[in-house]
Image 1 (cartoon, one colour):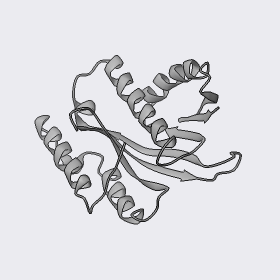
Image 2 (cartoon, rainbow, N blue to C red):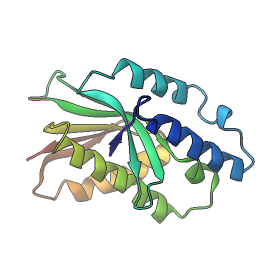
Image 3 (cartoon, rainbow, N blue to C red):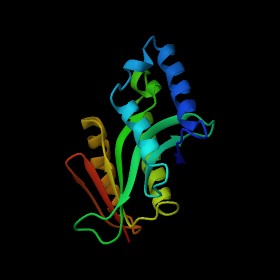
Image 4 (tube, one colour):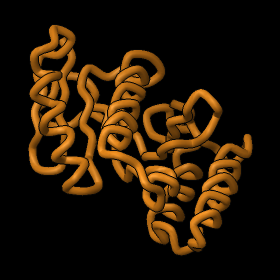
Amino acid sequence: MKRLSHHDGSWSDLQDKWSRQCHEFDEDFVSYVPTTMPMLAEQIEACTSDKWSGVFAVCNGEGEYEAVCFLNGAFIPKFTGRVLRVRHLILAPKYDFGDYSEDEYARLLANVFESVLQLSDSELQCPHVKIHFRSPADVAIFREFATKLDKLSHFSSVKMIGSWLFVSKA
């Protein structure tokens, strides 16, 4: 995952690339998630000097931004250690407007999950991860995914509660 910033131009780069994707589908980027994108831009500014919070993007091998989200590593009740919370997950416009199979969509969500786990083992070390999903389809995919993850020795607990996937590492 890549932390986005106004200062290095990465936020502008994401917006330019996603604007082009919207244009390819005759969609208006300004209307694409009109409240979330400005909120993420504000969070980038507010979290500039905060190691534990920021806006991050998942990029593929060609350097395309596939998803963006707000991450926050915080101490919350009922958890020992920090919890890396994933909020405001937005997929690239091509996934909203393009014709992708459920398997391709699931692979993208799995890539987001894997990227968050890697970050929780490195830059934002947290023994727990909570991911908030944006749609009932996402929840359904991860409900099935969670049952498989729960069997892996890397995790001490994996469960879906509402629209949240809770993961505690072993």
